[in-house]
Amino acid sequence: MDQWQAEYERSVEIRVLAQRMEEADYPVRFGSCGALNETAAAYLRFDALTQDHRARLTEADGSAGRTFRDYRSDGEGGEGGEEGDDAFRSVFTHTVAVPLRQRWLDIDAQYSTVLEP
Image (cartoon, rainbow, N blue to C red; front, top):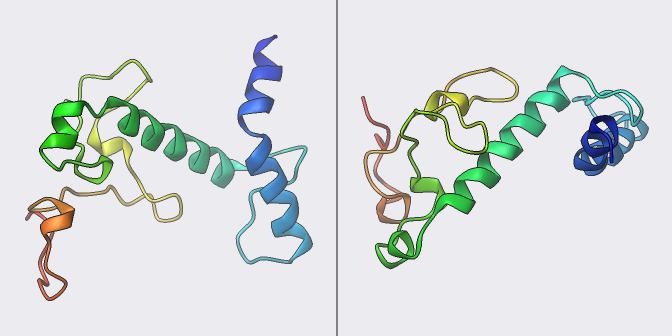
């Protein structure tokens, strides 16, 4: 399988979604089934990062109650091309995600400042 075919197969679901968005006249566009745009590319990068973080959790993390939402990168670039925590950015605003002050399962719904300063 060549590089182009591998890339296409990794993106087939988003390509179908792009087609459906276009057909439905959805306000956000990912391009077309044949040609994805930069928004779709950003979404694919984000999806790869989240899959990588889920795969890095260990049994010890599970025993400690840590989930992929609590994962923090060492910032040194992992096997999956991870670029550190600042690689997690909004697909639409490009705002960098910030860590929570505590495990997400321990956050009280009434707690208004859950982000680290």
